[in-house]
Image 1 (tube, rainbow, N blue to C red):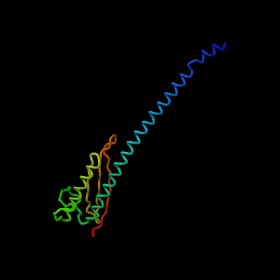
Image 2: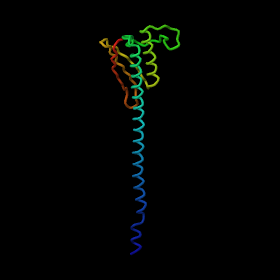
Image 3: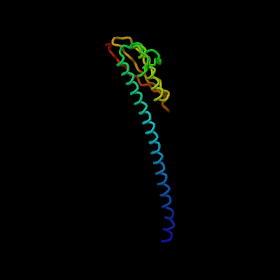
Image 4: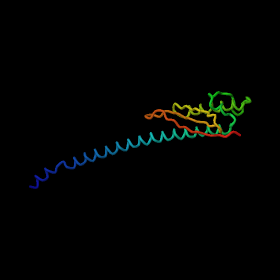
Length: 152
């Protein structure tokens, strides 16, 4: 009788080991998927932070050069207005140079980054600053900021 009981329970430890291996494997796959989602979310958060900082940078440039008005809404142009340059820039030329420099920063810091400034001729002048970039699996993402800067 003792021998028949031993044969019935033989191999029971192996089935338990296989089941626990499957459970652990599924858990590890879940952890790997969660880690991947965390990496994607942190990458997205990084791009959003960069976009917010770039929009704030353009807003500061507009506040410094308040008389640039509608020139900020025009296409950016390299007016050689960098510090140390020998060019005496007008307010409008400096505004277009700021847009040019800022758009180069947007393109360099964000994937497929594009920066646009729109001028609204209201009183006080309103500027809409848009930063657009492309994220994997999401597509095009836009951050938009509106700034009102009274003239001096």
